[in-house]
Structure formats: C-alpha cells, structure tokens
Length: 297
Image (cartoon, rainbow, N blue to C red):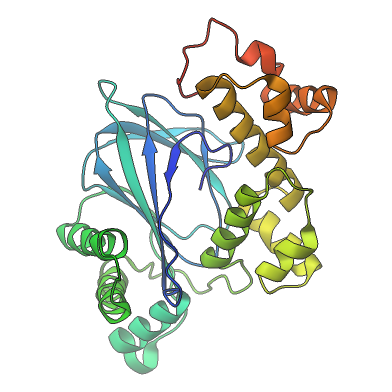
C-alpha cells in the first residue's frame, strides 16, 4: 500500500466473503518514491510478477538496505511497525508485484495442523528476495483465481491459502518468537477504509464514517490506523488527496483550480498551501515544463 501512491495500484474486483486473503497488485515504473508497507495484523507476502529491480527497505527514519530481485522472488514480513520500500527497475522496465495478506484464522488452523497440541502464536522470519518454487506456484494460482476468474471459487482460494500457510509455517516460522500481534488493524479493514478515502477525496474528511466502515470506535480505529501506517487517518487522507492532485497535474490539462476542487479544496490558495506543505513546491511549479508529462516521482 502506497503512502504517496507513487505507483499504479491496479484495481481489483471486490470479493465479498473472501477475507481469509487480501490480494493487491502494483505496477511500478523506472524510479518510485518510498512505498509505505503498513503494519497490519496479518503477515505479508510480496512476489515479483514482472521485471527486475533493485529493491531497498528501511524502517521509518532508518538506513536503506538493498537487494536485486527478479520474477518469482518473494518477501515475507510480519513486522510490528510500518516500514518503507522503494524500487529502481532495470533498463526502464515495468516492475509488477503482488501483495498477499494471510488471515490469522488460516495461521491458527495451519499451526494446529502442523504442531498439534504444541501449537502456539505464529511469527515468521523476515525473508527478502527469497526463492521458493512452491511459494511462487501457490501465489500465482491465487492470483489467477482472484484476478482472472470472473467468479472465483472461495473453496479453491481457501485451499490454496491453507496449503501456502502450512508451507510457510513449516519452512519460515521463527522458532525464537514467542508472541504475536493481537491488537492490530486487519488488512481487509485497512483496504476498506483506504478505498473509501480514495472514493471520497472531494468530500470532507469523516472519521466517524471510516471508523464505522472498520467496525471500530473512532478512538480505537484512529489508534490502530496510526499504528498501521505511522500517520493519523486525517493525515493519510490529505496525502491521498495530494497524490491524486500530483497525478492530475502531470497527466491532464485540467486547471490547477479544477484539480484543487476535484480533491476537495474550493479555495485555490488553501489547495496551494497544503500542496506546497506536503510536496515541497506549489502545484504550478510541480507542473513546470521541466517535468516530463507522465513521469513517476
């Protein structure tokens, strides 16, 4: 999930009833700004679908660590804190990745199956740029079923996710971890509220509506959202507005005033003030002739 949405987040059809897994697809171009990976309740798998790139990771405010990755390579993480990733593709290629979150209900079931009475909280080793043919095959099958099928089979999706989870527990379980996050925002709830934010950029921010969508109190929702993303819901909403404005400034000929109104600012001066605070330059300067139309920054 992109904090500043620097990449193309490929829209997927809603799949009611499929909450055991949350799948997202991203397409990245030559150079991107950091992508925020939220610290949600579920572990995250990231697999490279196309292209190759130098991938860098860091804790918020930390030092970058880099690795070269290619098609089929994967990342596995269950961090308690949000962190950042960024990519530089090889040879100007498009770099496509999929994100998959696995529900704790799957982890608990797989843990009991593998460990029986010795089953306990499950945490995983951090894997960066790993290679595992079974992980690759199962993730690809999940992608095909959830993306390509007009009506995916919940039973088939659940079976694939179960097989994947058992393999991860057998192969990548952290034997030294004794605890697991129990008080974190679930990935499907985070996706739901961010989708709602994106659909309502022109409207006033409403914490009450977002909390209701997440089925949480406003206080509890705000706390868990900030824990997941590192910023408050209102600040995240502003950043989504600015990301949309940046896209419109680069990819359309709409006036700055119209763009400001499209992302919720009826006052051009207020829009310019917020844009400059968040991006570092005014909207007009951001759209200067020196910037290549359609470039990703």
